[in-house]
Picture 1 (cartoon, rainbow, N blue to C red):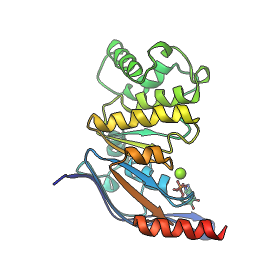
Picture 2: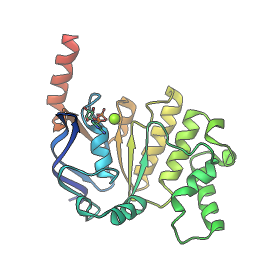
Picture 3: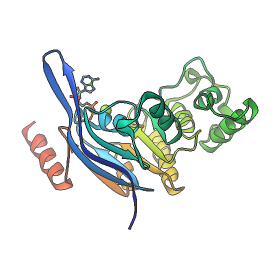
Length: 239
Ligand SMILES: Nc1ncnc2c1ncn2[C@@H]1O[C@H](COP(=O)(O)OP(=O)(O)O)[C@@H](O)[C@H]1O
Ligand SMILES: [Mg+2]
């Protein structure tokens, strides 16, 4: 039996917009296997980003339990949560979220600023990671001097810098052309093959082809593949 590294029970997140409440997550139960590559699919506004942010400790749930790598993160204080984010998870965003006035190497080093290693060692870790994502010759380039695909590779190197067990990626190829997308998806698949747990929000069938598990979400709830397909075909038919 494979152990689950993430367990979520009755997870809810409600956003208050003036007098109306938006139930972004409406009672999610989910378990993600250690070492899996899980792809989350769902239409725009269904709660995918909200779910990923809660699993990665970037936001707080309204209620419910989130156990990640044997830690109940919903009950952590801000300090504990900051350590969790730094040590246990790496995050990759659709818009790369690099610091524009820093070089590729400085961006990758940034999450190590609280680590014990000295400057030379941090730099050598950053250089190694940039080599690994194929950017050995772009260490001193700033984000504005890199293509979208290269920027996303810097962001992947940055996500790996503290050697996290789990990588979350929220539509990582959403801003990329077909060719760059393929290399990013290959990198994510390599991370999974090297033993990490990877959770990706993506609509790309090529990403789904790499997946060991698929999760479908509609209106803040996890649904079966059948229910998801039925709903998509109803929507397609009615438009
Ligand atoms: N910070 C926020 N404030 C208010 N509503 C939000 C916020 N974040 C997300 N929502 C709402 O929650 C729902 C789910 O959003 P999101 O998780 O971003 O969906 P997805 O990533 O699947 O497109 C949407 O209706 C969205 O408008
Ligand atoms: Mg989203």
